[in-house]
Image (cartoon, rainbow over all chains, first blue to last red; front, side, top):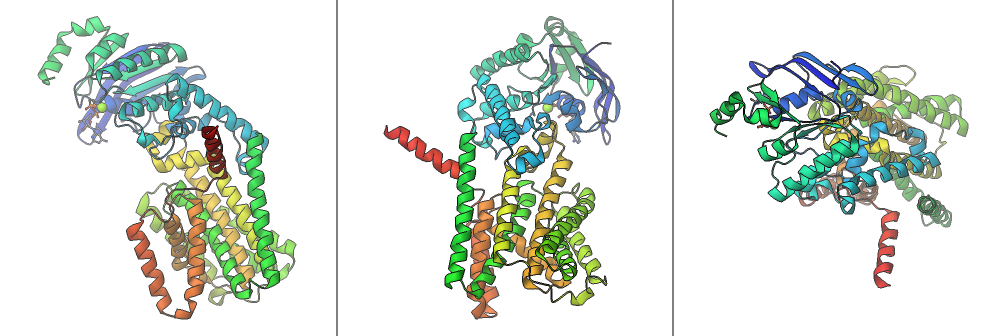
Length: 259
Length: 319
Ligand SMILES: Nc1ncnc2c1ncn2[C@@H]1O[C@H](COP(=O)(O)OP(=O)(O)OP(=O)(O)O)[C@@H](O)[C@H]1O
Ligand SMILES: [Mg+2]
């Protein structure tokens, strides 16, 4: 009951379609958990519910974070983000026409104390906060080896780099939980290997919990401490990588779907 | 911090130099009343269009009601300066116009900014029309006939200073935390919200700031032209402000300046052509939209900092 994030009986209906059906799960501090399942299982929809992008039909999401206990269901996405849940998107959603640096700075907006009057009249405090923000963003970008691309427009980055930038942007909000939706999609094996190292680094360095959707099974089995399997909107299984590998229901679901 | 100071000083010198240059030209007689009128019109249009560009180009909210907020400023100045015929009275009236237009922008923006694209355009157009009709039916505003004999308390220098002030405010806003938030809303609302940005709040902030500067332009318009009527602030006025924004480049303040100046000069030069003027004007617009749909400058901005950095890089290469 002292989980960082406790999800109970979560349901999402799209008209007649139940995309997420009675899902209960939990995430603990500093855990790396994977969410897997065949195409259309409802993984992205579950992410959208947890991060407030779409409203839940029923069920509860409770965060027991650093600043207290909050019911997240019904809260707008920006509030949930401020409470420490950040994410990337399956179909990359960077601010395409803005620079790499701006993408990161934007994610720091809600934490920044820069005042309207100070920025309009360029008071000393404006320069001070701007400098701090840029320094912090630069530090983050350097960790991810993006410091040389700071002035490049996000849309001009190679695909794999865009995915990396999305992770940096998500981290810039200082999350307690990071949701990654298929971070390795479209990457070659080398890029995937780098990404694996990167995710481990992020989790240790920032002491955050990661929930990861991924189709690349070797990546999942390497990284995840625990795995949830979703099928047709319902939880099929939960367990360690070894338990999941040996689970008959899981094998059947994947073979049945022809994967 | 020192380098930032340097850029600010350079901008300040450019503005002061521009001011003295024009004043000298007026004194010498190179700029006659005819040209001065043109300059004032251009200045007022710059104020209007930079504010609208903030709303459309940076926040990505398609507003078609800018003239409504201009009307509020114009009538505030017309009414107040008739009894308080002093420069102080004028600035008080500017302030009053700003306050009322901010209130109006909140009333209009809170329900409409939740709408998207075309719906927002129609809703803001309707809101501006409501403002116009209210003015049309009030006694204090002189009804459909409007107000004339407004004391001329704003001349070219006032307009010039106001252009500088409003542009500084808008550009500084764009380059701050708020401006970045506003631009992220334009880029991707879902991603912005997922990054903790209250998209509705920032849309409203851009809308209100744009409305406030439109009121300033309205005050200058009323005081300089000395005659206003509700018909000056109809949909055609909103559209002509929009044309400046689109022509210069949606998302480029530099482009707005260029477009306002080009159109202002074109308008004056073509005055002798009578009815043909509107045709030439329209053809020019169509041509630009065909060959450069992103506007004259796209999203490019003039930046002293960039020029300096280029020089520095060159020096380094040569060493
Ligand atoms: N906004 C929506 N409106 C209606 N149906 C939706 C919506 N979003 C998702 N769905 C449906 O919900 C189901 C689950 O979709 P979801 O995107 O969550 O699957 P997924 O597990 O992420 O699949 P993939 O591995 O392909 O990304 C699908 O049948 C999808 O068509
Ligand atoms: Mg998905």
